[in-house]
Image (tube, rainbow, N blue to C red; front, side, top):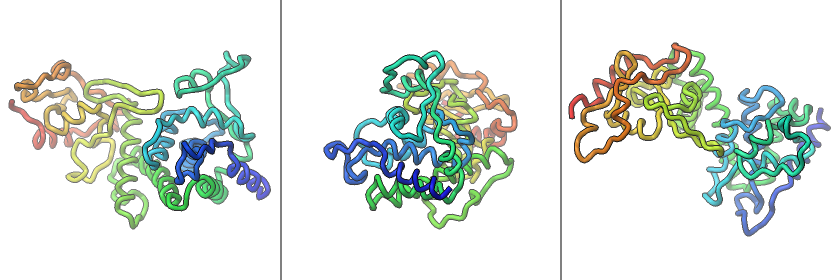
Length: 326
């Protein structure tokens, strides 16, 4: 097993990456970070059991983790996970799974996530590598070689921390979905308050967006871009500062407009889970458009009733936030 690990450590250190110094900065050792970021994302998902079998799907969740790493770098060109996912085929440990109806076609090039999903179901990695990644000791060695080979010393600590936060927030998200009691300690003792907040925020968001399947609870809109962006936020009904409660029963997925309207007291929900629209919406110079059509319409809720918003939280919102008069 040790010899196998050594061979994959070498393979990870010798990925075929673009090394154009005019395109890439010193932070990434003047090479493209996309393949290393994809592999780091896969390591995170295996560590937190989001990937449990040897098949890597180009899922929204994996794309979101990949983009989280991208955001650690200074803004430059738009990044798509489709490029590293496809071009990792140059590595001996990566095998793309072509859609059955396209298996005998050549020249299946990829330029976007939409195109990637049209052509490929996903990818498999070498079975012995997958086994190694499932073991923490070897997984950490593989992570270390990626970070140390492709990134400058002054960003390496940030990348290690991002990995920790990704895994911890996944565990926190899973705990929110499996308990009916508040989790004040997040299951982890952290000296860094900022890290605690990031873990809590990301874990809450993952749980809520998953339960509502990227659909706004109040207006019903659902929009996902091929590159992995969603229109919804995870919103607390009773704010964290008031409730210290991240349970799904104190949350909803809301689009940007409904989130703002709910926080401003222009929308709420009644005792029968119907949408309330404040009379203040109609005041000049407002042009509320479709918002008025949502009045008294049932809100969208998760399939399992145990995750439905608690009416006590809505009662607090109606009393403390909702504008009952114009």
